[in-house]
Length: 170
Figure (spheres, rainbow, N blue to C red):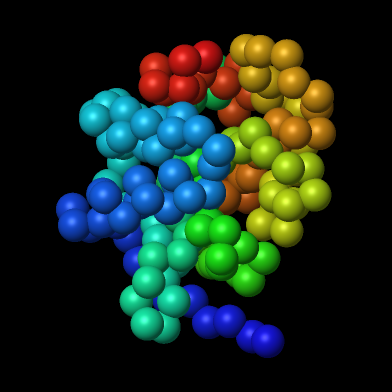
């Protein structure tokens, strides 16, 4: 069966629905609380980089967030949380939201996105090991889980340690 999703950026009326998606997708409220903390941080939150995937009936099914981080002294974006309601998982809602968020980041002139996540999932969007760019987290994690995506191949990719927004607690 083929599923079709529409994507759009977050609006002020979506806050509760986004929280519900994250609460449904994860076993604890950590990710829901993280989204709210990032939304409240003017240094992390970037308008137009919080994306939703909706079913044709308008039900919010998937979510992807890009927020400001830094690699070395250069601005970059961190992808996450990404969430999909359990009843919509493995149907493309998460991929649709992520692709829309990455497209918006390119349109806004961003250069680099980092993600800590499933080594089998994120390469479909073009992510590769961050270490290949000389990018590393400030904490211990197996190399294959820390990934990066250069959005503009014409621009140099910064290297160094990733500094996440304060809300991440790392």
